[in-house]
Length: 255
Image (cartoon, rainbow, N blue to C red; front, side):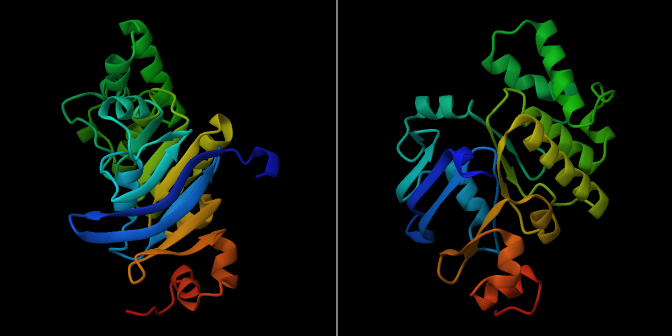
């Protein structure tokens, strides 16, 4: 990414998050740039998904700021958050499809809720989004009739329904076989390259990280914060932190 293209779309500053009196993460600071694939990773229980949930406004932070396209999620009102939700899409770990609806009907849901489009136009847009993720011809299928990888693709089509500039992914490869996971990685890259979408991904799948990530932050549950940030391929070889090198090389790590 060229320097002139590095427009900040998300900035997290001095963030502290947790549940009740328990601090999960503290002193969290990073920027995410337009068109970047930014990955949040770390060991089990380090707070990856908790951080993502705070970034998309499901929880309020203890302190600090989460600024998305110039607006602060941390102190936004409920009405402001409703507007924020139109700015980005979320692909949850399970795909989160409604089992009683066809794939087209699932993708059409946000269009019906948040737009004034006609039913014909909604159907057309839903079909187009499904075609973008390789599901043309599957519009009338029920979620129970398709594979896990296809469910993830359908969930991604729904997340893209309102043409968001930012997409958040929570463990997108979870439960997928290696071939399906690689196919999803390829799709993520294609969508970024063709649409310019900024993507924030929580994952622990190193193969996917090396395939798609421009930059990563690595969380550590011992310090309750960020232990490293940068290009994962460079960090794997050159990080000055031995644990980070071991983590990225799947070597034996400290307990």
